[in-house]
Image (tube, helix red, strand yellow):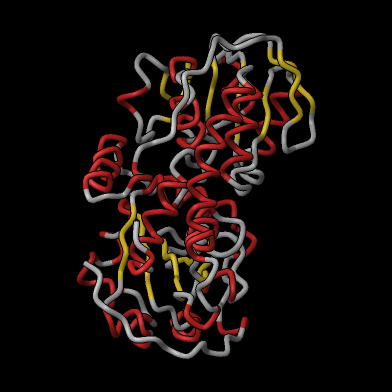
Length: 354
């Protein structure tokens, strides 16, 4: 529950106050953040239904009825490597954001191999399930043995060597950078599987929702923009530290589009990086955001203020301003991004109206 807040003057932030421990393990931090996600698709759909019931018109998940894919497709991924997709009989996807796009395009049935810890088990039918986390879980030899006709990776660090190795082995494999804006991810994914026009239509739905939110927030003075910190229970590498969302994260997109200030990015954090008590206190966030799947790991809705070192000295703790969001709305960039922006904006700035 959101409690009314008192405005604070913008503090002078020192980047050095944020301890960027584990910076060379950013890819692992992102991996752990993904692996922590346990929220089911049904839970997220219910959240969105609840939002619609309360007057949030943006709560309906964007979708289109895409035609049958047109193959072959020549595609240049974000690794700048050109591939040719000749068959979608057995597509291997490496994260849930890609599954969401396939589903919104009406082609989730094309997913033939997926992570065993996917939150979208109810959508995957008879798709083969594999372990994608942990040391040695994914090897070129192991993936080749699965005989995929297409492999889609999204993590430019964690998936890069695997995708490159698969390309060398003659497998159609590519990278679509998950750090870019959601509409770009959608259009690229749709183009990859031969439904480019449908992808543009789907991306437009997400873009329209984002643009509407940005327009609402356009007149908010800089001094009145809410200062937000997105916290994660996944530590950098194996450190186990609490991390903050910095630049090049879906969370940064959602906070910025909603009209807030991402104090993690402002303080110099890149992606998800460990944050010290001193750094968190210096950032002076007015609002804390946590994904549903991680709130209990951070002490729960009541205990987070004592559990996370440094929170007690922030305006957010003083006013107990905590927003818990569905994972798909804050942790990944894709079809739920527009919903996440509208949802967050409604809570940060209720005075803007529906």
